[in-house]
Length: 195
Image 1: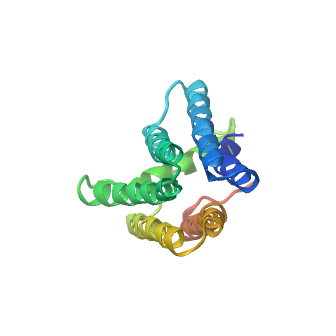
Image 2 (image 1 turned 90 degrees about the vertical axis):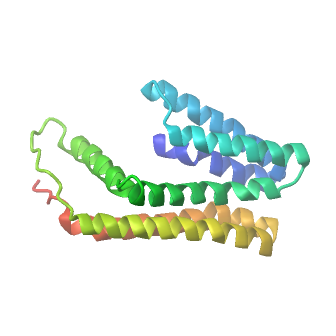
């Protein structure tokens, strides 16, 4: 359910764009982003900063798209979000000496491990070399910066239809491949499932 909700604004944006237009699709994107915030609040009692940031970007750029009837504002949304993510990885690593990819992966792996184990008490730590986390942080930082620029390239060199298809399927596909590469890179360090 949570995974579906993460992609719901994008799915509905695409569907409404195909059946109506970019302005209605943008309005639906904003409304479903509000629903996402409410869901996260009722699930955990708080809303993560990243959700607030993504909503604010959708609200401002989406609002400007609707207000000025100019789709170029919404085209910038993916670029702004991916640029912020790339800068966050860069600044956190080289200014604050924190590796956000390491933090995210450790949290994810711990969560998955706890769900798989249920009542089992095997607390074998997952040990992944720091150098792997450094490589992954650099990979994600470069990938996010590349996606940020690629979104603008597609937006300004191709039709609106092509950009919408790229936003929905291209960006999702690139992200899926990057996640797959990440998992392949850390796979040999994960504990074996003994039954």
